[in-house]
Image 1 (cartoon, rainbow, N blue to C red):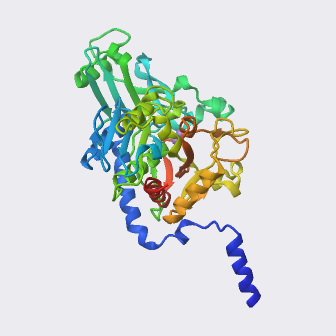
Image 2 (image 1 turned 45 degrees about the vertical axis):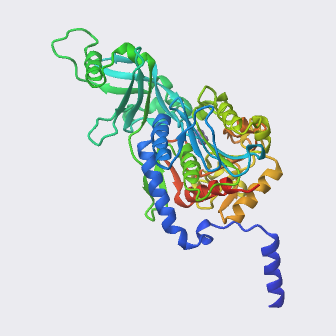
Image 3 (image 1 turned 90 degrees about the vertical axis):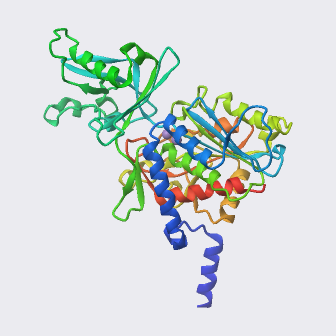
Length: 469
Ligand code: MN
Ligand code: MN
């Protein structure tokens, strides 16, 4: 008996015990988790694009006392400011007690998600049916996007400077759009093709209409009828569609998944699940943080983080420099003392596709926020590969606050790979580590996450902002 206790103690002290979060969370967290997830689902349902995310979060930030940050403005400890970068990315800061040369605590997430964009000349008619041509944005599995109801969200920029907001499918009463697929009866040849080739990008056309303008004899009379509807509703003509950003996204709202309601299914968890956690944690800080907390919600991550609203944009450096100018601190001095949690989703282990995961280093649903020391492909290519010291720093931060976390890789070595904004932060001389919510069916029109992981990610973000060092 004595010896058994010895062994038990030895085991507990020496071995890592990976437990399901529900075996570790005090049940008292349940209500807080449900409340948080309810708010998150509400956010998802009104923020289906990066523009809508910015609009909704600016509204929430202003209600929480955040003010637009204008260059040259004086800032003092406790001030809360934000900058809206072209309506597509958002930067926020809560000025801490310590000066900026002692660094900032940053969270960086992205609010763009894979989707179908309209081409610049989208509208056409074929065989008495009208369509929009699309060009997919981000990494999608094309077959997943046909025969599901789709909505159209975005803007049309007019030459006079006006911006027309377009939203088709948001109201219950609205029509939906769809990409059609072959019937199985005639799918014999298509069935023989590899999955990646069976469905071509040029066949991803949105069905818009079938009813011709009667009395018109011209061959494009269905197209004309559709354009007439768009003109009557939005005041736009076909040529206005060339300066538009219209995005087709799945036409459903976030909902609970599972008979036990332990999960959330939605379009766009990647990466609004981390973006919302990073944002909400900043809003919910109950006291002024030691170091300045910064939250950046970037656009364009799914296509490489380039462009003025992507994480590689100087918009971030400009924001940080403007902050540093209020304290006459060189931004490079601030960066080298700063820490960034690159908050992006990771792949959750899926028992139905176990062969692509390495179980000892996979992220599991309900095991908490997933840290990733590195992402990338092959020999860690395209990854900033955080240092051991930084992983230790975050372990300690999370353990201090009882945040449930796990550490994982995306999948098996050489099975594939992926990247995040981490390297763009690290390249700025900011210590950076990846961490985020594990997702099932990532990049699909209906992704699944666990409520426990959502909530622990939010708690993890708070721990980062609250850090003293
Ligand atoms: Mn992502
Ligand atoms: Mn992604």
